Length: 257
Ligand SMILES: NC(=O)c1ccc[n+]([C@@H]2O[C@H](COP(=O)([O-])OP(=O)(O)OC[C@H]3O[C@@H](n4cnc5c(N)ncnc54)[C@H](OP(=O)(O)O)[C@@H]3O)[C@@H](O)[C@H]2O)c1
Image 1 (cartoon, rainbow, N blue to C red):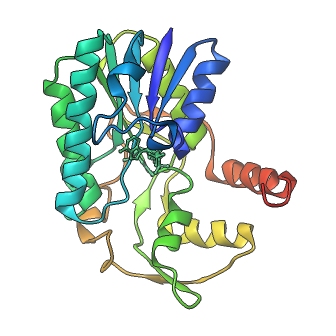
Image 2 (image 1 turned 90 degrees about the horizontal axis):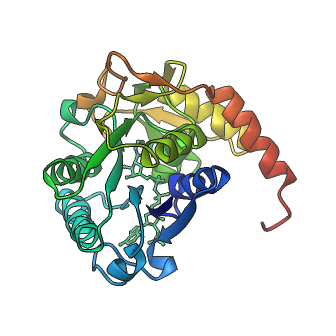
């Protein structure tokens, strides 16, 4: 099959391209660095010509509610219209578990708008909700790091390995449209502050962590809000195995690479 990956240079997109190619499929990478912009629509119809399925793993760093909703809405409208024009048969969206249970977060508002557009759109679809990725804890500390400290919400989560998510997306895109798929999660319950501490220690960049609900992750995300629902698909890679693999590959990477 010929499968386009939107956000192909991103954390999940890159791994999804690898998973598809390992399984013998042809891929088309879509991102601004590859000359295609889903927000403006530039280059989209040309990129999707001859494509059987699209996996949308794009993202926006917007922390403003209206900006996040505008990015995910506009880019999805453009994408679905270009897919309709070019005869794409299957649209696969990666989304976040529990979006109907928390309302204070701008990114989540954008993802909810995106899900609605896909569900009502002209192309047969699969929507795969996933829990937070194993690298979420490190990102959360980077967003708020200042003078050797970072604020992190003490979120309860069941994080999943990025490569496991990519494998599932590749499998879904090369099958029949499925509608809403069962939640995808990793094998263990974790606390975000603890994950952040362990990740930064493994990286050799320890930091003072201040647990708080006053940042971008508020009390509406506390308790079991982020946890997978009944019948979830449980991916195999534990946080510790992922962290050990990451630490090893960083140690082996060429200097500056
Ligand atoms: N992080 C988590 O824990 C988690 C959990 C569940 C679901 N998700 C979802 O997973 C998805 C992927 O997240 P990620 O962390 O892998 O994202 P990421 O690393 O930030 O990558 C985002 C990708 O989107 C592309 N992109 C951004 N704006 C674009 C535009 N206008 N046109 C074309 N491409 C554009 C970027 O490439 P360019 O900059 O080159 O354009 C990049 O390839 C997101 O939708 C997120 O909501 C994340």
